[in-house]
Length: 114
Length: 115
Image (cartoon, rainbow over all chains, first blue to last red; front, side):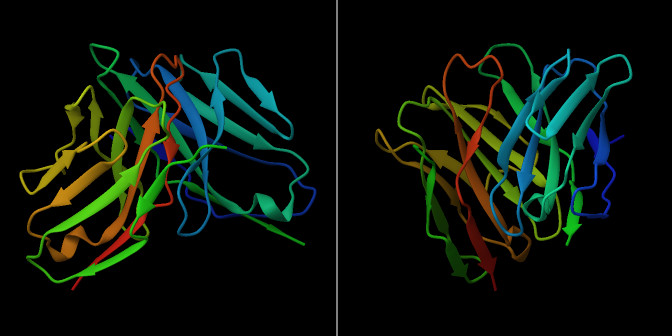
């Protein structure tokens, strides 16, 4: 089973629509969770961290369900500029504070059309 | 806003040649990483580096790869004898010490093309 799995999409939505997608992770010891955004041929950029209680940042809402080991991202009032690939990222710390790595999902592609 | 920088932006090399990819992490960060992304595939962890030593490496990071922090600012990835399958985008990232959420900040990447 892959460490992080995402629905690849693509999700093709009109401007102003709401779009939501999930990600599942396999390692129950995972400790930190993030959504990164990646534009074509660019570096991943942190969109938001995901906290157990769920959190919101403007039009973006992230949820974490540790029992079911999934993370979700919801985008409200989609803008053309939201078109990107959204990467689900899980951080697993093993042992010391220095010994951890990020595991990336393959990404969910979102295209917002005018 | 401070950022991670990488040079060169694009490197073309012949199979079997050595390449060195360079990164300048954010100045007060102490944790450094290399990732790669083959075209159309996911971002993959290669190696993490802290306190002048490797703290973790993936199965991809074999004996052909090495990392170094030769001075107080640069962080390099060397591939000794490149193969065609090393063609990918290589991202450097850094993270400050003590961040409980372990956010990592990525550089713009070096596109490596092995011919």
